[in-house]
Length: 245
Image 1: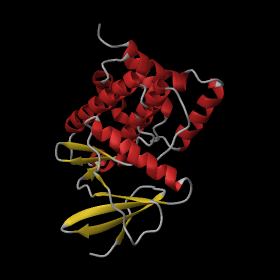
Image 2: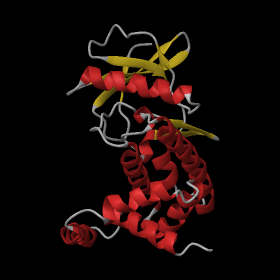
Image 3: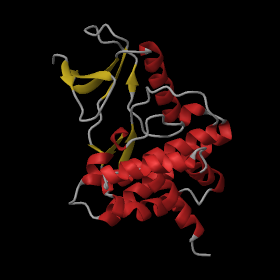
């Protein structure tokens, strides 16, 4: 089978190809534009670390594709639906979606707890969006580890990842589901004080709050369906302060 271009319905700074070898479908990811070698090496390093810690990631094969000159990796192709597609699907009931999200949040909390215990930044996902999780039946696969972040302490990195991922989940499901999503997040994270304090702090304790809130209000006025970091942080704060004793 010849190499064929593969274009997912999401932004990517890489070029993806499909190829079948000995009856197995492979995905080849070629890194374009800036920091190509560094991004390839980061993909391999994070993929290896997550796999060694028991999280499901695509298997990267120790081979090269002769047709591609750019830095690249060859991995086994994953079947399944993107989490974003699943959360937007009106045919799937909300309680079922929340059960799936609980499973994902539990995996993420286990990983974040491990990252803090070992001070291992490789266990953070620097592009935590709902396109980077693939659902295959009961299996949850994590993908796309190429993105390089600026140095930061682990707790800040965790707070940013949780906040961004939660915001994108709520955006996919609809803002009317914000409290339900944040509540299952809190339960899965066992109401972890340090992590949840950091998540709130990153938005609600930034300097120049008046300016940030004004910009937020302008965005919401222009697009009432938009989910912002304030929606996540304020919903989290409300639920933490009003949790049953």
